[in-house]
Length: 244
Image (cartoon, rainbow, N blue to C red; front, side, top):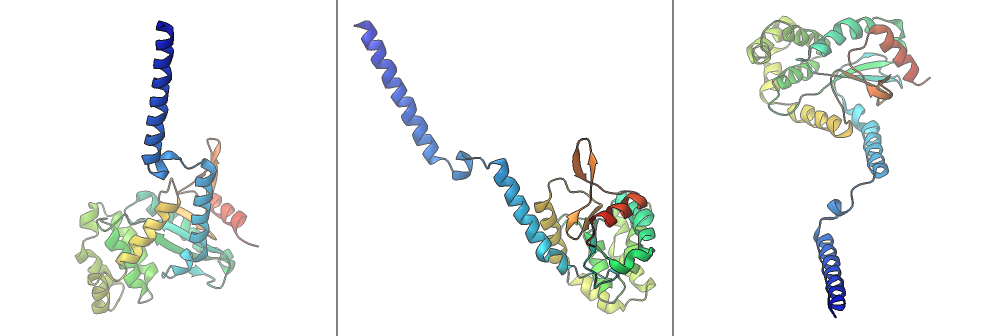
């Protein structure tokens, strides 16, 4: 009799547990019940990358260097406060831009300004506003100069310093100031930065994209996005990745 009661109790307990877990599972959100399989995650990321390639780079409004009719476009993602971005520009990009092979490529810059409160956002805006007057590269040089001036970032990129530079490079001051004060390009810059961060897991600056694909090197057993690489490595990777 005792054994029968124990067996019955165990059966009842099992039924209660099964019912509980069934109800709990039914009430959970779909995304919690079924974690996304690695394959599905990868497919979603590849789809996002394809979307990025399709029209994202075509919407860079900044002046480039090289052949703007070329099917090979290089995008350097940067931030004016980043010392590695500064080093990469001065030690790799500048020498690269002087090479003859620019006949079959087009080089542009883009920026990773992290949100409305980023102290370097105004520097990126200054580059865009100078671009309106055909002087992106002149402002670009000056912004990297400010970042290495020894001042803290907020002081270096204060409006008065940026307006002083606008005068030095002979911009039409009223038009430039209006562009800055009206935040003409702010939402565009922030939106583009957000897109990069959504698509790439381990994104830093500087990063370089060749025809929409990031430059990577084989490091510690895997392909990894790389930053301030030397001129020879950079040139070799461009030649390897560009369309023939």
